[in-house]
Image (tube, rainbow, N blue to C red):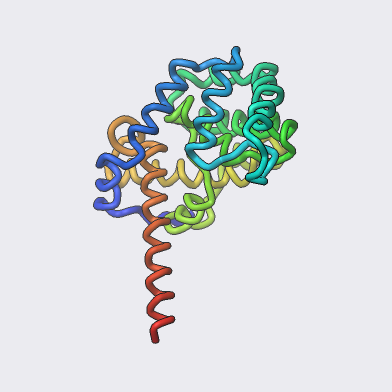
Length: 237
């Protein structure tokens, strides 16, 4: 596996306050104070705020003309029971005291796949991105945040990660979402390399899944700016 490490400057920039910090801290606190999925209020509050804050819609209807009361009906009648009738709390509690190791990482992938699977039964879509974000706010040190921008930027640092046999076994048995598993393992490997070669801790005040996400999105934004600049120069020639 070829890993290109971010520069110290790139890492240090992501230790600085970010524009979304207050929103993120609010979501972390919301999930910490309402960790379970027993009441409709707990579930809907977390699901709606996370999905809408992070543009990861759970709604079946993409038509913007759908009325708000139909959206409310969907969350109350379908999403809330989906969580209430699941084993999500049991599975979250099994990981709650875990630190980030290869073993806990593999368990987190299975939990992610479980959430994707039960949500697929509700709206017939794979909620890979939403599931990663929702679980991240419950267990921020174990779950990497997936979206297409972060996945694209990650390729700048990690080329074709060499997956361990334990992960390949889970992929073959279809016990994980392969796309998310490969993405997360690349993130996990990059964090370990940053820690080992830049002497930065995996969690706490230095590098973490959240700060790695900041780093990836900043790279994605920079790539977009460079592409726009090139396009503008080409147009003006």
